[in-house]
Image (tube, rainbow, N blue to C red; front, side, top):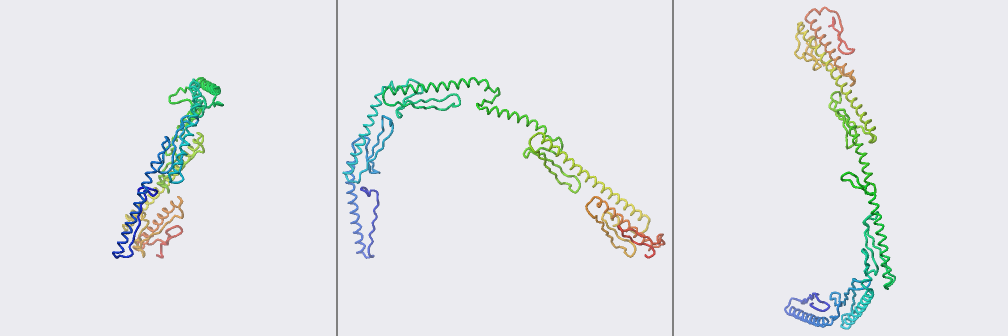
Length: 441
């Protein structure tokens, strides 16, 4: 639809034939043509009516116009005088229906309201005109007349003192519109402004008196009115002295001991060189109870003492390892010398494998019924103590020596050598274990 109350609305009626016969299709088409004609007639009638209403909806008065979207008369007026100066008035007058009579009645109501607004505005202008321009000029800086508040207003910003930068805006109302009351309010505003300026001047004098004290004498440092800057400077100075003192104390002066700044502790870093913990890293930590120099020094001494104990343990383990190796080398040399002596004496043919008997802890018998039989006695320490570790290799060497003596005696008996006529004797093998050699053999 192009006009009327349904303007912009789409009409899409449907006309379905009863069946597919040509007569029914033609009848449905004729019904659609008749409906379209009716719609066009309604649209044409709405266009005529809207044209007539458009001529009627011209108010003919300034500040009043017709709002098509809301279908209302609207007043748009700005007050020029009085306490509401500069304020916009937006009044609406809606007709009860679309009839020309209701539209006209709403327009007349809008005109009447506009006349009342203009009268109020003229009354405010007359009141404002009752004061001469010289009476509303205060003649003093920072004081002016506020038309909206109908009062004298001070606008002053404090320059010194605790309220520095704060804006003062006191207002002084006259009791009525008489020139005497307006002048009285103006004088009160002037007196209040003088008091504000006096307070500001006193604050400026006070700040100037302390200006000499506020010169720090140091670049990049300014004076803080509350004294917080001086307190910060004092704390910073004390911290600088303390940090310098602690810096010298926190150098341990001992290798493997260092200060851990992140955790505020003394840390030992030491790697064991010998003993059962050889290659193991030691990282003990010693934390002072607080940041006082005494506690830091006490923790450092504790770390030094612990490091000394670690070094003593490491040296003791190294000494024990050296002593054990020396004893094993000595036993090996003795056995090798005995083996070479037996070979030189021609007591028998020795196996080449006997040269390493001590190294592998084993030997072979070369004579008697057990000729060629391997002997592998085991000498196990009873625990992991150093004493047992020393006793086991010595017992093994002694057992090997006994086996060699038995082997030599059996060979001599078999060949009828110088040992054949010897009597019975006992050869020690292990602790509490002996081998009997003599006539019985």
